[in-house]
Image (tube, rainbow, N blue to C red):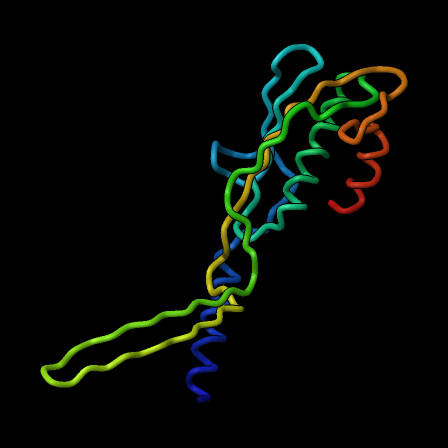
Length: 162
């Protein structure tokens, strides 16, 4: 039993070393962790943030919004509206359970087996997700709407978490 615990601890420590943290930074390549943007036209951008392995979906979405706020402020805009959103990848949903049933025949004998598995600890770094948002920026009073953000307020609020 002690040997099994040592093996599990070693595997967990190795998997912790293998996964890089998700930082708010420019991506160094197409699939690298971080943000990149594409200017569609003046005041309109497509912003993508690629999370690292195991990064929470909310963190990835927040970092994309933060990048949109930074772009809006850099270009002299006061607010932005998210015109479109897209989430790619499969977030880690935590514990899972599986059930397996099997049977076999050995001459005159037969056997049936049932197995139940419960997974709660991931030994790997976990899946990664990315989000892409298309934003339209504006000046002056912010229009009402759930997908419209004050760039300064969002930068202040989310910037504290980075």
